[in-house]
Length: 350
Image 1 (cartoon, helix red, strand yellow):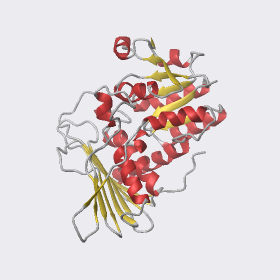
Image 2: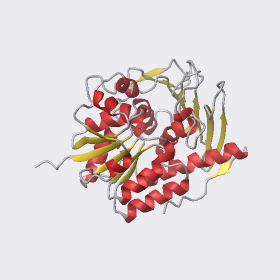
Image 3: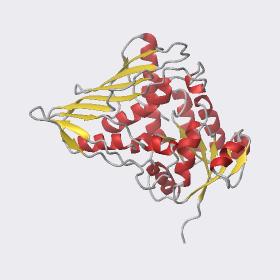
C-alpha cells in the first residue's frame, strides 16, 4: 500500500505562498495541501476551491490533522511561527531567509532537535535550470579550475512598491529577499568563503531599504565569487559569468519556472522547466560553443521533503545548510555597516 499522504498546512498566501508553495505542494505525489492560513479566503479559494482556509496561523498550527507546516509569511515572522509549530509537534518548512539572524536560526535548530521534528528551508533555486546548467558544466571540467564566479539577479522595477519586502522593517530589502538564493547557490558550489565584503545602496527615489547589493566572497585558492542584485537593470546583465583556467562560461537568460508559475502552468506540465537559452562556452581560441542548459524542476524540493518524512531519503535542504547561508547573510550586513572585510569564524549551529 502507498504511504498515507502527508497533510500540509500553508501559512501565508502572499506572493511566495500563492506562486511557489501551493502549486508545488499540490503537484507533489504524497503531499496534500489540506489547509491554508490566510486573511483572504476568497483569494485562496479562487485557486484552490477544495482547500480549507483558516483565518490565522495559531488555528492552523493547533490542528491535529496537519503533519507539515509551511511558512510563507513576512521574514520577521519566520522564526516565531517556526518555533511555535515545532513545539506543537509539526514538521516545518520555512521560506527563505531561515530567520533574521544567527541567534534565531540556532534556536530553531535546537527546537527541532528537542522535538524530533524535520526542519528545512525552501532554497528552491538549487533546482533552477540556469544554476543546474552551470553546476554541471563546472563539474564536467569544461572551464577547468574556477577562479572567478559572478551570480546576478537583476530586475527593472524603478517604482518602489507598497509591499513589506520593500519597506523599512526588519528583514526587508533586496539582500534579505534575493541574497539567500545567491548565497545558497554559491555555497553549494564552493562551500563557505574565508571572508565577506559587502556594499548595499538605495538607488531608487523613495527607497526605504536596500535595492542594490554587491557582495564579494574570498576563498583560499584565489577564487572570488561576486553576488549581485539590483532593481534598476533594464537588460544586458547575464545571470552567470564563470571564468576558469581552461575557459569561460556565460549563461544569459534566467530559469523560467517562476514565470511559468505566474502564468498558471502546472508544475510538471509540458514545457515545465525547459530552458532554450544555451550556455556559451569560450576557450580563447575560437567562437563560443553553445552548451544545452539543463531542465529545471523545483518540485524536487518537495519530492525530497516527502521522501525524507517517510524515511526514504535525506532532507533536501538541511537546517544546518540554511544556517550556513545565514552566516554569510549576516556577515555581509556587518561588512556593509562597518565598511570592512569580515572574516567568517567557525560555524556553531548547535
